[in-house]
Length: 197
Image (cartoon, one colour):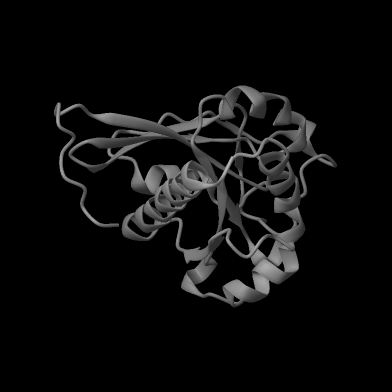
């Protein structure tokens, strides 16, 4: 992202971004890796109540789950601060998503290509609300198994929606995802501003 000159008044602009995706895809990890403050998490130990509800076959070592949200903050430059809100991944907590997305400029849909179908609900949610989003492929074990174009085709999303690879554990990688989303949102807003009425 090109460095922007400071705003004339020296005012700091803030924006809200939602991090969404399926259960166990790495949303809490992403927020924690990039946040410049100690992130607020609502991780709870998974209990027997989740047996038969949460599918942990693809994430066998997962012992905790987000039950409300994750929250973090990152300063992109002197005058732009992003506030990050990670959604809970399980369907029983989706009733909270409407409140979490209120006021957001855009969203990151984090995907695990081993469980691609888990992100369909998040994509449908943001498309229905016309909230700009990008798809971030979480490269587990540091390996990118699928080409972004193949993922785009599998998800049947529009060609203008960015699809990027990332490592949710790596600060620079996740920062790049957030910058890509901000650039995409700005591009969309500019194109709407010049579109004929």
